[in-house]
Amino acid sequence: MYLPHPNQKETNFDQADLTQNTHKSSNEILAQLLAEFVPKSQTIREVFIESSALRNLPEKLLHHFGLSKVTLIADENTWSVAGLAAQRELQKAEFTVEKILFPANPRPRPTVEAARTLSDKLYSDNSIPIVIGTGVLNDLVKFAAFKAGQSYCCVPTAASMDGYASAGSVLSDQGFKITHNCAPPKLILIDLDILGTAPSEMSGWGYGDLAGKVPAGGDWIVADSLGLEIIDPIAWPLVQGNLRLCLENPEGILKGEPEALQSLVIGLLLTGLAMEFFGSSRPASGADHQIAHLWEMEHHQFNSQPVSHGACVSIGCLSTMALYDWLLQQPLDQLAYNKSNYKTMEDKEAEIKYVFKQPEIAKRAFVETEKKHLELEQIEERIAQLKTVWPKLRYRLQSHLLPTIKLKSLLEAASAPIRARQIGISEDHLKRTIRAARFIRSRYTILDLLDQTDLLDRALLEARLPF
Ligand SMILES: [Zn+2]
Image (tube, rainbow, N blue to C red; front, side, top):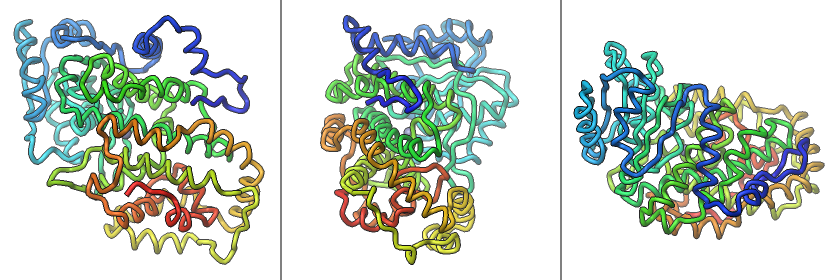
């Protein structure tokens, strides 16, 4: 999967790792990588992963925080899965334990407003915030602790997303989903027994989130080839170098086998670290996540429940893969561009206002889109550049991307959704989302390439999208 940066020596990190470690198991290789890179984090002091790890919580907290007063933050589900047990361990060790409990239904929403309210509570209290849970809860506490000037501890209850170790919290601000820079947890304590009891669909979400790194890597290769965002020699191999190892056992993940969950969770953690080291979510997020974020911004529900981040990414991932499959069939080196189809910023503004009915969201989308807008002359230059780089770019993409059919079968085996209708998204809704997704981030992806070459409409018509 790894492709070296053109300026680098032709070293294959993936191969190098594997040949040096042929006697080691996947998990040993991954654990070794984690042990090597956690000390490079600005904030994370320890990632402790073991069966029955919860027993070590008091000792680890004293070691890293030097305090014996904590605030456990959970929802009713995560409280019964791990919060109560954590409280018992802490009280046995004579900790003072406060708790903040969110309802299980409706689930808390990932908004800046909710995180600010939580931050005010944490600010006035000199205790260690400990989030018991994943996803939205972790994003809320990460933002709240950061704003309150406190370090926090994360005790995940499922391997369901990639945000444990990342230096960003994905929250909606006036309806617009954005990654806010925040410090990751100081301590991440992962009890494999607890992960094993999580509903298998939650691990499937984490698997979907991780699988999204395949097309996200494709997007970075495109941006790199066009000289827009150069591939980073540390963040890239951290995410892509061992992605296959982390994705190799979806059946084990579905069954909740500790070894398989461990490799999934380490893959997700390495992704978080890569985002921290690179300073943005580029190593882990491309068009796949832009598509997912739009559904999250719509508060999309299926069966009366918000559809999880990882499930949205799973469909975003397969949609982007389908677009890549289509793109790779096109002779872009012979592309003929029809100037009369050029879209001015005014055209895009009209489309943005049509797509995003809320003025605040439309305003933000306009700002993001304007950052990457090209005037007609620049478009012509971009197309000339693309024609030149296409043979090499196509080769790089083909070498990097897993076959879509393979990725689909892996996702299916992990019980992640592989068709949009499985999360209540129709064909029309899927196409509308793909078309709009490029507006919400200035980050260059395959969607921008298709738009700038005037191929987006044809791609949406002809690509084998997963509806
Ligand atoms: Zn994600």
